Length: 327
Picture 1 (cartoon, rainbow, N blue to C red):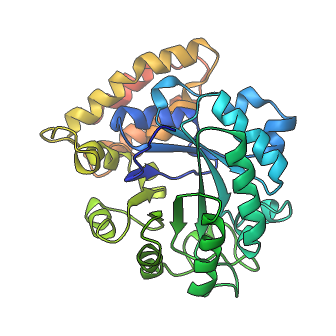
Picture 2 (picture 1 turned 135 degrees about the vertical axis):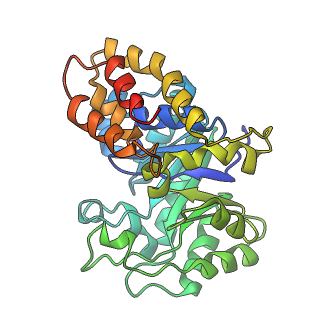
């Protein structure tokens, strides 16, 4: 089984971390582990499997996140992940939306540790890639450290070694998924305590992390950091990841304006290939809108893409015009 370095990764984010987004992120970091959006077992077993599993080889290392609670179905989908060449398959035990709760998917599974363990074991038995889990620190009134500790201990009995912990509990009754990303307070010390109690496990921390300086502080306590919204809204943060977390040779002014512009232009072959297959520029460029945040001309860059990229005939010329505002 190939060893994956999870010291720095991007989070699975519905409607955001799609294959175009991940391909763009790969221009900014060659090493960060990239996660797909959550895909439900039903979508893979009964839906258009190619649509949900398709990705570009440049995305490696890339992990598929699954949503489900039926061990047999999850096993089948873990096998799909291996067959399609994903580097890891991850079980979602953190999503708080009503839709997934009704199907016993996501954060509600924290109330059923043995079922989660059965799911992880079935996935492990079905594939030869690593099976990991992403979960919350608790849900509703099941939010004590002891419950999270026992949940992790139960799942770890399967041999699962890597746990990514969103350091907020999920409030399933009364808060929307968006509110669940902001209102429950972050409790990083509980994740640190988990690592202290389970030193043999790989503990990755997620939730509210915005800067490399914050990452450095977390990495004194845990094994890895996962960035979600900050990586999406400010993708330039990925440009220092290879040097800071993976020991790659330092690049002077790694996140400079010139390197950002070059990253966009290096992405042109991918864009042209996707356009030739019928994609619309908007579905690719929407993930690039935050690249120049804080730089003069960023607003005009975003506006030009937002106003023009959705047009069927839009291509590289639209990207070049947008770049002219920041160049």
